[in-house]
Image (cartoon, rainbow, N blue to C red; front, side, top):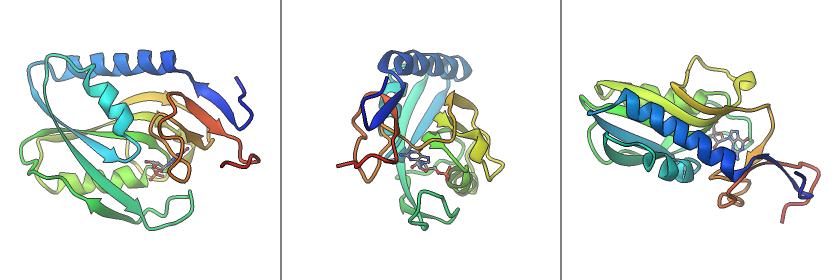
Length: 180
Ligand code: 5GP
C-alpha cells in the first residue's frame, strides 16, 4: 500500500502476530525463570510494551537504557554513549535486551559488552527488525521479528526526526517526499 510519503512494509496484524510468536518463544525458553527485560530507548518502547504482555509464565522485571550514537548521520559511527543507564545491578540475572532494529549492529554490540562486564547470568537479544545486509559487528540476535531490506523505516516506535513513532505500522519512508 502506498500512502504518498510512505509505503507500508508491515501492517498491524502482521506485527501483532509476530510479537505473539516472539512472546511465546521467550515464554518457552524462560518458563518458570526470572527475566529482566531491558528496553533500548526510545525506539524499543512500543515493541517492548507489546512483547512483555505476550510473555507468560515468566517472572518479568523491566528496565531501560538510553544510548546515543556520536555520529549525526543515519550511518551509525559505532561510538556509543550511555545517556541513561540501568537502575539496578544485573549480577546473576537473565537479561533480555530489546531493540527496535539492528542495522550495523554496533549499538547492540556496545550495549551487550557493557552489560556482560556487570556479571549477569546471560544476556540475550530480541530485536523486532533486522537489516542483515548492513551488519558491521559480530552481534547476533537470539530472537528476531522480521528481516527487512536496506530501507529506512519508521513507525511502531521508529522515528524520523522524532516523528512517526506512534504509527501502528512499519513504513518505508520515501526519501523524495517532504516530511512535515
Ligand atoms: P546500529 O548501531 O545497529 O547501526 O543502529 C541501530 C539504531 O539505529 C536503531 O536502534 C535505530 O535507532 C537506528 N536505525 C537503524 N535503522 C533504522 C531505520 O531504518 N529507521 C529508523 N527510524 N531508525 C533506524
